[in-house]
Image 1 (cartoon, rainbow, N blue to C red):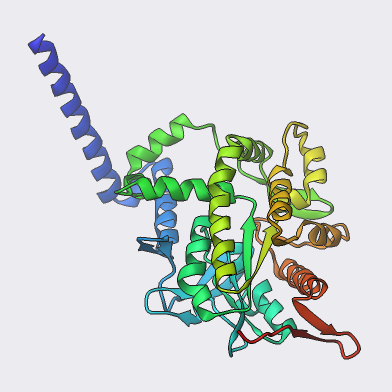
Image 2 (image 1 turned 45 degrees about the horizontal axis):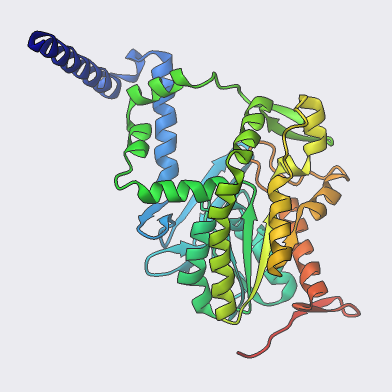
Length: 376
């Protein structure tokens, strides 16, 4: 028995040495010596490392944008400058555009941040301009409700705004679940090996289905990249353990509402739909997606929650669908975020909603919009 154990240990030791030699060769060998697959894998890991360099660690938020960020992002769909204009001691945000006191603050992910467009073209800045009062952009790409609420409490509410805009996106159930999982992880080993281990990434690829390169498809005469099978898996994951993940997510929204109420601030929840929701009928038909895929479940749940909690809520699905039905491209075809037109439509819909709710008022004769500003 002892001999068998020694042989197993020796075999494992040999395997470890072989894997270490393989990793070393992949890192130190001239690029021309590497097989094409390893070169592609190395390029992918480098892109992931660069993407993460956009953020810095934070004990409460997990990650955040560093102050004084200023660089250019080049994407097949756009070239934009990412610059933080609100640079606090430990974090940077896109911030405001008009200057002066913050009438409103907006928290959310990349759709609030305005990924793909320059700062003045994002809906937050467009809304501020149409109202004539500053709205501060606190959006951070890749974050979720747990981080929105913490950003709100830590940075946005201390500015004593009149209104909070809380952007809720289609993938926020995934974001909330990921936040909890990463909070429990003391050392980010998984991220490290994804960024630096050829062996890990090769093994992971062998266990997953072959990746289908998204192709450009047309929905309502608008081009967008589409992987039907990937979309199906996304929607199935979206509805898997839905109630449990919704309960986890909505606790963060509840906390944000309470904090806003305690501060005497109007809380406005914005449902920010994905392009899949806007163009669903056309995509479903051309891709033969099954009827069992309920793309509308999250939106219905959010709207129902707003009604039960008596929360001021704007579902932006219909305004975007209305413009999409006219053949207007509202999302970038590959990237999937709102383009300039999408941001314009969103800002206009929010402005009209604020007027209708009495949160903002419009001088229709003069074509001007003002805000209800009650001293606090």
